[in-house]
Length: 404
Length: 89
Ligand SMILES: Cc1cc2nc3c(=O)[nH]c(=O)nc-3n(C[C@H](O)[C@H](O)[C@H](O)COP(=O)(O)OP(=O)(O)OC[C@H]3O[C@@H](n4cnc5c(N)ncnc54)[C@H](O)[C@@H]3O)c2cc1C
Image (cartoon, rainbow over the protein chains, first blue to last red):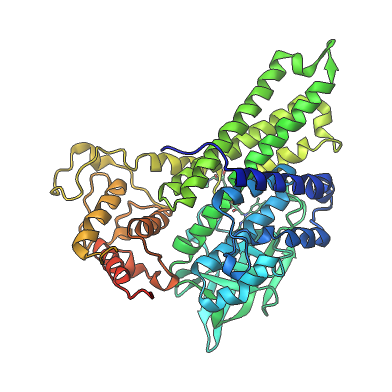
């Protein structure tokens, strides 16, 4: 797969804009937000004013409809400063994109202008107490009433669930997985903050309880049965892409912090940067940042082209970037020694945040098994599609079946 | 101006795309793709992206019926239906 390596001048310019916004408005506060386990409302107002929350909203509805690379760069620079803020862009983007892609005209008109300006914040509610990686195991139910639906069930670990105005929420309708737009004020919806999370601590996680929760008929998004295969899958794909870029930022932040610390601190009569085993860690971070960025750029260009390969490319990018981010963050703490464990330096936050990146939008293990299975796609010798059947050889009988 | 895609033109392209996922299993035109067990959760997205880019059309929410995607015949029918839909000039 050929890909372009260079950013266009316009992309380079927006990257600078995102970088300076993150440097001025996010990075200085990220540790404090992490400690207080919340992003303050004033910041949501500030970021809303930039239009960044409209990144995944079509221009016709007031969004900035960033191209895939632009959205990636926004996530990289934000993730470099604060993974919790990046996760706001992720889930808000997922809800916006799902409504733009699969919503009815009425849903688009009602929600997209508000999501674009940040007047409404969106979240993504799929995970349940009993359904994590295996989303097919979701048991939240929806049943029809005269004027809408009644939802019953529970959702866990909902990023910005404490703050969201609308949840893209998945439930079984007549046994089939179906997407709904559930408003914060819906009767029977109970939102409880999740306390003491390991990483992305300021991402205001919540648990949702739906007890006889009534939503109008217009809450149904897409068709029953397509909730997971289309709506959640495309949203998760965007989420994965956003997290992958955020991890590039995280690796870069680990490198930046380690370069500057190793430059200042002296042990055994020389700076840490001159000790070879420290150099190994710096070299791996620098290489990891560059490699992860290239994989993300490739995924971005393929997404932009609407190429079916983009799905696979995004998995590769997220898998590599998130595992590299965790290793880089662990090394960054190592380079900082005891100082890396204290609150004075952000590297302990990076390490906690990076672990979360290996769990969300597909765990490392799910990435590994899926990527391995996908590697078999196209592996069999190419045959004309119209070739006669019944030519299967002995080996094919053992072919692994690929399931979700 | 591109002419309307016919069923006969659409089918080989769809079969060729699917062949990448099915290894040595040759799927019949009326066989349920989702019942084969060969496709994972990413497949439907790849299929939608393929249909959109190969036939230069947009899959809308109203097209999102499982019946439109479950067989080669069904996908070809969806494509021809959408390609021959009147376009505003
Ligand atoms: C900070 C944070 C924010 C989150 N935000 C959201 C959100 O906004 N919305 C939302 O819906 N969810 C959210 N989640 C939930 C997240 O998506 C799930 O945690 C994730 O899907 C994994 O599910 P699980 O935690 O139940 O782990 P499990 O699925 O129980 O997995 C546990 C372990 O078993 C492994 N495992 C499971 N199945 C397999 C397999 N087939 N092969 C090999 N290994 C396997 C996993 O890789 C993992 O290591 C969030 C989670 C966190 C921590």
